[in-house]
Length: 538
Image (cartoon, rainbow, N blue to C red; front, side):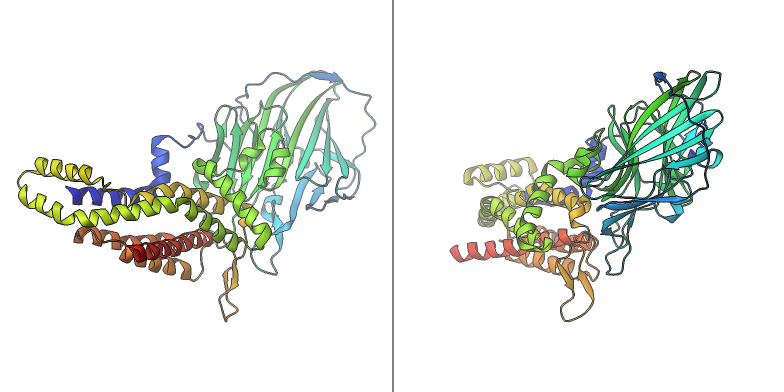
């Protein structure tokens, strides 16, 4: 019976380690996706089901100046954080390049472009009016020219167009030290009949995934008051199209590290999203906008194009800060990330910072590990008595179990005490796992740039796996050594089970982020040192 308990304990430890996400989903600890339905091509915006909104309030339009269309041209907005290129035909965005981030972890890599060439062909940020592509079907002019903004400075571009008796004014406001762009959209009824208009804000983006990082997926994300944060990364589902009539606080395209999003001032917009020709496409739609002749309707939206950094997201509207998400273990991931950033400020290396964090965690768990080791020693001493009980009550399992439990109680031994430190550290492990996967500070963060005595890049990106599997193999070896140093219980079956664990963990860690492997490796080395100290005192 005791052997069975130990086997079950080991299996549970392994199951918790490997299958936590599946367990959390099954238990309902993760947010469930909102109900989604297939939609037709997003760009056509031909859904007839109105979002549940109230008609917009109208105000008399000022006397309209004579509209004069001009030839299409590009205009550039340059700030310390990004360079954005717009086209005067509709104010569509052609590129949005982040100055502080490389697309790949190579010296000659271009900077991250959150739009990309394939997506630019779909006219990101183009407005749809009653399903019409205004960037194609309207005549446009541009008030303004190239902007170069220094920190603390603001600027504006105004795109003016006419289509089907409507005057459209798009006022884009820029601030040099943020990644947000605010748009004020005026739709003016220049005709003599009342109009009922449907407006769609659109956004298109290429894949934001990093080469060499299998955990960084591009996905559509959205946030509602009713359901909170939700995402979809399945390209098959997105290829069919998804939609939600829940009022959107914001929606966008994101990866682990970057996001391009639309946050309307009024949350009464519905979502449509689609994956088309390798491009992630979204639209936020507001229907039933009634505009009397000579009147205008004004809508406001904020766009965010940038990294998932707390200070920038927190300054954005509509709870856009929820995009910085560390999952179920946020309560552990955030403080550990803060500690890593704190250490990095002093040592200048994120790998060393992770090692210092590991030492700090090990110190915190030191008393528990010591107690666990003593429990294993006690179990070893009880083995002869437990063997006699098994032999004496070989035909009476119930009596055998009762005697073994009485033995544990008499000698105050916890049979699962040896596994307890590992089980308790699993939440810490997953918290750090989420931090390493989602913290942009660790993207392309280097520990050891090159394999010693070579020019071969090695641990130059702690968010990506070890390209040569050196650290996972060494980690497995230290785990095996740790098992060999642990007190033997005398049960051959249990010992074989425990010796299998290093092999299982090695294969698990082959594709884990290098920073996570470094943490577990250093933790094993410290555990071995602790066991050596205890053996000396024994």
